[in-house]
Length: 266
Ligand code: FAD
Ligand code: FES
Image (cartoon, rainbow, N blue to C red; front, side, top):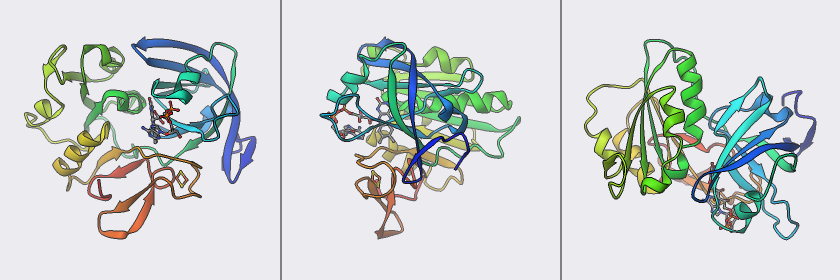
């Protein structure tokens, strides 16, 4: 455990992080910037387990780390209000404190990628945020990046301009109200080049498509979601079955949320 983790519970870091800012970047989608010591040990693809600041809610809510700024000791989370917990998060404002457990999960393996490598990022809807830190880090190493983003419609489009700073970006919308009509497969099926690594996060249907499409790719990764309780590997609420053995489970909070394609049953 990193020495920057001051308070621990069952081996994980707990910290009251400070809200630096919060704004609505699209209808019902919020960007929350948090500051704290925990930023020092965050990695792309990990998530934070946030306590809802209301004692009526016992379970924490998992939200991915969208980007990390080590100079300012801040991280950015992007979330959609779904139910009561995220609705309460959306009321947080500058100076508030939020109880954070994390950083959780294994994150994306970005090792050994450098100038001359080509990487494909595929994001869908509210699954796009964790790809932002991947793009930032790989771009700084000179890696060439192609990003394909899929959304329901124009109102749901997020992070297109941010990702354009680091990569070539294609956008699809299901109803054709923005970008190409259809889902990400409209772009991916037309790609002729090979990629050294593929990183993705999105809705279950998109994850199943990518798992099949890149089943045998040596470095293709899916960031997956599952209902969670403890978020620390203890309760087995979040398990998925291993593809090669239906009796062996993988915990999304502990062995995941990132899994290589072809390894878990979707
Ligand atoms: P409610 O529906 O009232 O929640 C009831 C319970 O169900 C809570 O315990 C809640 O945590 C759980 N739950 C509901 N939906 C989900 C879900 N999709 N996944 C897991 N648990 C859920 N959402 C974002 O908008 N941005 C992100 O970056 C993001 N990253 C995630 C990373 C991981 C590893 C996981 C597992 C989920 C992520 N989610 C993300 C989904 C987010 O956790 C849920 O939208 C949120 O927990 C809903 O809470 P709620 O109280 O508003 O909704
Ligand atoms: Fe408890 Fe994953 S949420 S083991």
